[in-house]
Length: 453
Image 1 (cartoon, rainbow, N blue to C red):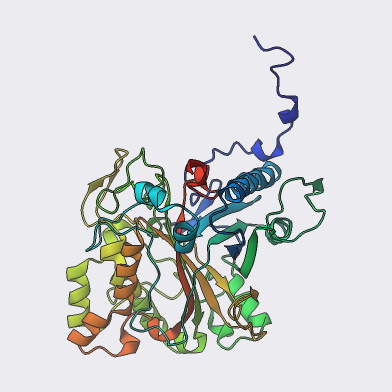
Image 2: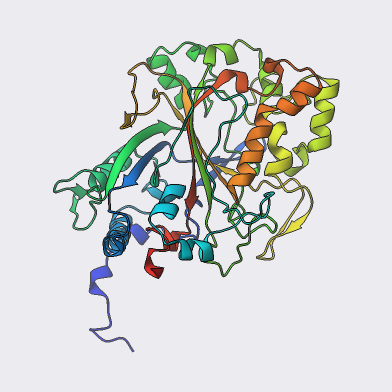
């Protein structure tokens, strides 16, 4: 029987819990995201506003006491924020990830040797599943490979929520959130912000914002498009569901198990990509459709959400046939034989997933930044440029690397003498920045492994 001393009076009114949100074990799953029907195709209604903040640790290397204190403070800060805003689109989502430099420079080698996920889908199976990003064949010479220690991805239907949280986390001062005074949120004394990257997705925003900024090609963007290139990106069947992108879930990608330290974690890829809108919309609908998906698609212009169900998947033999018979490679088709399971599969948790099920998750968003809102390590131009801050999750960085190489399509392009404009849509893209991160499970999102030192 509860007594007065057993009752938690401090938690009588907890507004963050009134939506009944169950916090997932992963960071990348988004409770409360709804699904709507697009001509029979299920589409996730993702948060409207986004921001990514990258940073480097300012703590002296080898000062373990300071690092442990930083872990405690970041954990307190995130908990205090999430006690004010609910974990759903009307509140805020916060995902924290860590670069290779963090694990190599701040964590003892004995711990990383024991706990870091190792890739099995790699020629060198002892490699970590987190590896440095590389340049691909069709990347520009100006591409910057970044080496940040930490990144934060904020998502919400309310832009002010994101701006306020960034302010209280990284800028000193006496602040509040939603009018509530804060005590333990500022972490900017041990995290030096290197960039702030903002953007949006959905609700016809690409056309509206591009027109207001008088971006060339804006009038060609379909009125209901969620991304600048027109087609919907958040098909339920085109995004990995549940915990499928985690290290351990689908056998064969890493050595992790449900009992591993990093179980329910994943690899996050982050890049900024500028888009040549005039060139893209210089193609007619049929050519855009075929280069986005595959040359066998026949959907009409009013359909911005062609089905991404498992049965629509393209595998290697189909891709080869497309190149040989039509001379066109579709962007989605180029990578689906890697981003989807190629046979009926049972996960380590006993879930049966059919052939063609996606195991790669995207949470990319539109931007007009050139390239970022703030960049401590390079110039920022006030001239708006349409683009995307690309964010993708995979069980290993090796898998993403293989997918991205296929996106360039060099092998099939040479074999079948395909012009650049017939090989997906890389000819319309310019990548400016790129980095891989490890996203720990939610329970270990604050400086992973530090508590074991």
